[in-house]
Length: 237
Ligand SMILES: [Zn+2]
Image (cartoon, rainbow, N blue to C red; front, side, top):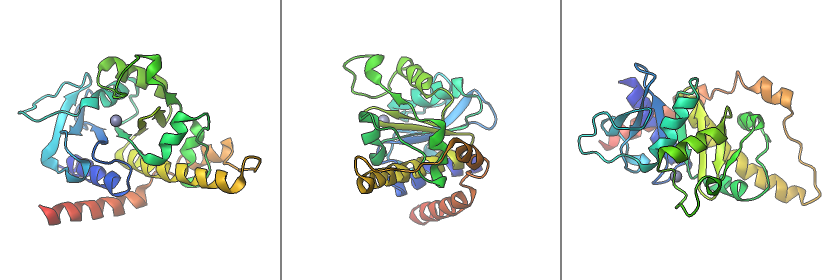
């Protein structure tokens, strides 16, 4: 089934680009039932194949677990699908270059066209405002709902001291945004270093951000990423 192939490829692409390590995850809404979504069982994303993909309802109950272990933070996915009907793909990652922006007062800015969506706003989820003394993981429906509320209608949200959640109306957009969010954060740090404390950094303005939306679907890159990921998956089977 091609949606399962796409999801297996998405796991491997995000691992390849350093966006998810052994622990991030990516899901896709079912194309047959909008009240269901697909997410790999709890294994390293780089190893995911179609056989590892499990189906969940939007309360994140597995439909047919057959002894397979579910990802503990799956509530991130289910609760976002509930509040964002137009979203069909969700990535949760621990993308290293975005972490500094979640723990400081420095905001991510739209600094180059491939990550223009940053200009729509990237809020930060402070788990401590919701529950104190957690291990920072979103392991309950309650925490998932709070994160979905912080995300609101935005393309991404940072999670303080933990990572980020990135969404899109399809897998190519959610995956592409995740990869370019990591690159953009790294480039922003470089620009800040070059510019120094008093230096000027010119960002995209609102009209440029809006103009970028229709074209920024990562379609060409997705076809290449997907082909490479599937070739690698088949060769190792
Ligand atoms: Zn996590």
